[in-house]
Image (tube, rainbow, N blue to C red; front, top):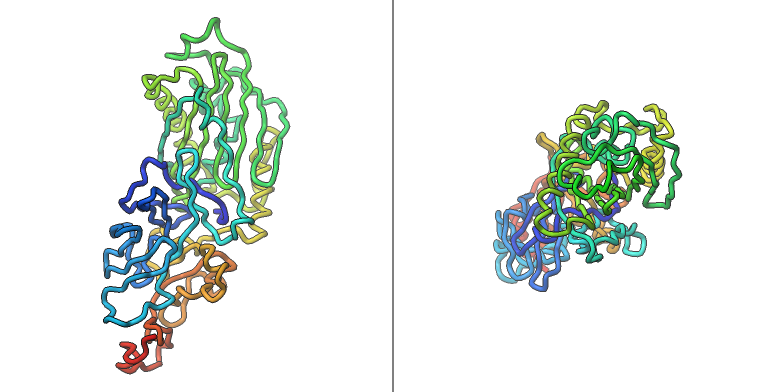
Length: 419
């Protein structure tokens, strides 16, 4: 999984003033709207005892933890610790990671990484969103497979005659002519000639004859997880933007935004949504059965043909980004099942912008153990872990101690040490 990208984590109309948990990159986040309508995205992990902030409530524009009432402002800093006596300061460590948010194309995008603003990859441009000639539908579906398998499936033109023969492909004409790819650092797009099946149902009414023998399909990907499919039908255009959101290593939430410039009345939305869902349901059992479950790291590990050119382009770019340190490994995911001694979060831009905070709200597990090793908890790798600690510092926080250390009552309570 790749960090340092904008991820569309939810449809905009699903985000309100009430805290909502969303999962991406194997980690949990809480999102909610401020009074001015802006959206906040924080790590769903209270810095105190790791409670889920998404189970709390929004007070003004701050979120209050459901466990001990700690409040965090949109930037992640704690502003209130109810258990503190009057006059006691709030530790600098008392904060959670806050992630940049943008609302575009009817989606809420969170930047999951620590890059400064001028170094962040762009959000893809969806020109159909603001075009009044297009109608839109949204579709959600869970697929029990790795997101890269679902991602590559959509740019795999050769599977359509066999998996979607009754809907999208033509088993009698499965050949894929060679195609050229237009590529930059963040995307790859190609026009591919396909042979469609005969039209059926509502769409058949728009055909003036039996239908075309060939269709031009524009297929492509946008990093980190979006696939575009543009089908030019004789009577109009259907464009799908397929967001493959990694919930965990082997579970993907597919969010599809579908645009069409035919049958644009609301009465046709149900049929459009049904067609998209039927395509996904045809893909689902095939993708869920693929082995190995995870995409191989090495390009030669699987056999590739010319018809696989878009997948190969993705894998090559993926290798480059992995070499640049943008990959999130197994040890960096906190939503996978099983007990852990530490919880890992993706480092936010605040850790890089303020070097003194790079490790400020990170704790080792008791005994000095960390998840994935000491190196995995630094801001440069993009993760930080939270766990347990023992003795209090002058600002009211708790400092780490070894198992053999002793702690006096004054140290444990921070008596006389408030700033």
